[in-house]
Amino acid sequence: MKKTTPLIILDFGSQYSQLIARRVRELGVYCELYPHYISQATLSQLAPSGIILSGGPESVGQSFSPKVPDYVFELGVPVLGICYGMQAMAAQLGGQVASGGQKEFGLAKLVRASLPAEVAAQSLFALPVFENKEEIQVWMSHGDHVTQLPPGFYLLAQSEGACCAAMMDPQRRFYGVQFHPEVTHTPEGKAVLAYFVHTVCGCELNWQPTQIIPEIIQSIREQVNDEKVLMAFSGGVDSSVAATLLHQALGDKLHCIFIDTGLLRLNEVSQVKAMFEKDHRINLTMLDASERFLSELQEIDDPEQKRKTIGRVFIEIFEEEAQKHRDCHWLAQGTIYSDVIESAGASSSQASHVIKSHHNVGGLPADMNLKLIEPLRELFKDEVRQIGLALGLPHAWLYRHPFPGAGLGIRMMCPVTQAILEKLRLADAIFIEELQKQDLYYQVSQAFAVYLPVNSVGVVGDARQYAPVIALRAVKTDDFMTAHWAELPYSFLSKVAHRIVNEVPQVSRVVYDITGKPPATIEWE
Ligand code: XMP
Image (cartoon, rainbow, N blue to C red):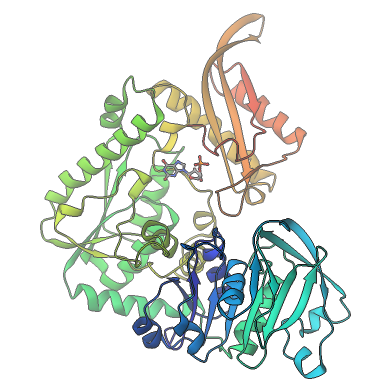
């Protein structure tokens, strides 16, 4: 159902390419992302109903800048170029693009051009949301701009700086926008994409992630063909949903291994056990490897060294355990579409079969001689969550903040010890509990406590105490690549600080991190 005449997005390297794909799928239309140099054979085979050209970091004027293959324009289907995509379209179809000079970054206002009535009716701004709207607010991010339209094109709108902001060839159904309709800063951006996808390309509503659950289950059964499957189960969103799907498809043929690194959050191990072993009856081996991790991490200060050690030990334990399951011929992973795109680089290579870097620390061994099964490979995170809900996993579990594979190990600026882990776990749990109690948890994208091994003076009762500091970090972000620190209410922060110094032994002070990313990262290590 979903694969018939998909819409495709050709990636020219923009940081927003994935976002375009997500937006199109949110509109109920199945789409896939391909590198800009897609072959003619692949393109013909896909028979797309429309093509979107993404933005990109290059300038069209340079000899090495990526081109739109000619056969894209010759296919006879509608094409929408966004930012670089529009400039490449303009330059290749006989227009002119100038570099530098008129740079526009951030919010901009567009003024619509006056058009002949029959052309205006096909404009991207023909939608009711734009009726009586002379000025349209959009998000721009470009240094180059189109200075001369190619033959057959009309100007649809200009920015205040008199740059061509949108153009159209109604005959060939080619559209270009200099702004980014895929970002939320362009309020009517979704309407622009909807017009292109539904009205221009005629795409039907063919995508609703939960409807493909039976299809995924069927395809797991066909692929595995009665053989046994092993899975390293982390309890994160992707791994929880993948394991639940695999379990529905295979029952006891699925065997999950959960490795407790000792670096997890308060009660996490017991929650995993209760939910997946008891409620979902998944075949689960819980390995308590906390002492082994602790002893391997002794005296390691350097964050990268910590990550590498945690990754290595994780793989060693998994391999040892897998030896006991020699009758398993398959390895299941919770790889999702973003992992496939990021690991393979949609524009740098054909999105080949890539093993997800489990815990971001090197990936599971490729030489285990197991065949790989990844039931979520074609799905974005929000789609995985919808599927998880439909499978009966709790909302609170599916919408938890992300947690790094290296766990609390990278949330203390010193070597890992049991005593510090206990302190940090408790402080973190207090922070999260208060966020939940005060309905702030879902208003931030990620929140956690960090242990700072800096002694500072405090007063407990009548005695002076010389003890470490806990830092609180909470950020708001869409993509975790950039982030704002969350402006949590002072009264809330004060309550959390009060509870931490009172309930966590040997903490003298609590501080709140007010640094954005960039320049800081979200994690402290
Ligand atoms: P940074 O600190 O790079 O974090 O701004 C961005 C996002 O990535 C998560 N993160 C990790 N996740 N293993 C993981 O699985 C890691 O080593 C790791 N380091 C950072 C971080 O929690 C945030 O969500």
